[in-house]
Length: 360
Image (cartoon, rainbow, N blue to C red):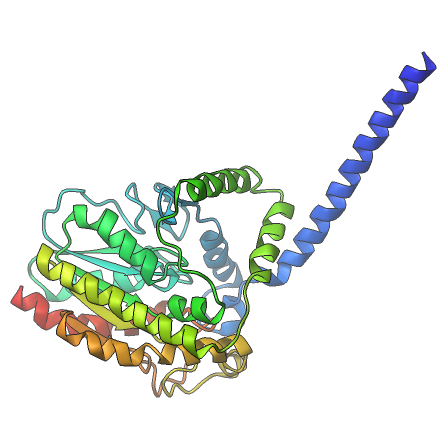
């Protein structure tokens, strides 16, 4: 009888010990996450007209976005938050008909296209483009936000070939460069369509992290492991390979578009420190960080191949100097801008593509 009681006490003691250790780890994980998930928008000054609560809401809504990985990372359909809506096809914004009813434009890119830091669906680059077309063009034109956070050119190419083609695009606008440059600096391998084993691993990992959404320890462990696998350095051979594959990838996509009946336009995006923007003290501080300097250097490697794409693509344009002469704050980190920045970018894209739209 005493032995049974002793085993029971040991079991209860062990359970309490594990629970205590779990609570300690969870507390440490939440403390560790504070600077990682601090809302940078608050310090940047890009939304001085909004309250702190509204700025925090922009950050928190973006942090709630869920993803699926059937082949590549995609936005999980049917997500609705106060400042972000993802429709039933996985695109940011309102519902669209799968069957095309009018001239259809897709804007493809990473989080800068999706609108990381935008205060609404309408103040993304795509949202402003839609507004400009609605105001200036008599015929209806549909602009669809196909941005996915973290997407680089290899993921974007896969998305176009395997998902967007069936939606019959008339024009695909590529707005990228940052994530390709960032991956090259951090020596990360391009991720396109994984094999069967990778799909299983990704699915199990995503299910686990979603189930543990409110227990932060596994998320912090996952973050630390991923960060420990990256290195920031200049490897000229790697950067050269990155620029060559980037050019070849979009050259092939432009040729595909010419054969399939849609046009492709490529815009090289700005990041903090490109061009001659008058930096605010906050922006200047960010621009001097090692990672910012390194990625800016890598992004420069894409300017030459961008010019080489003119023969196969409908239009290419370097937007890295688009904020030249602007004094007010645009960036809240070294790549994302707010609503004002998105409107300036969208206006430049709109005016650049308008001749092709009229011709079409």
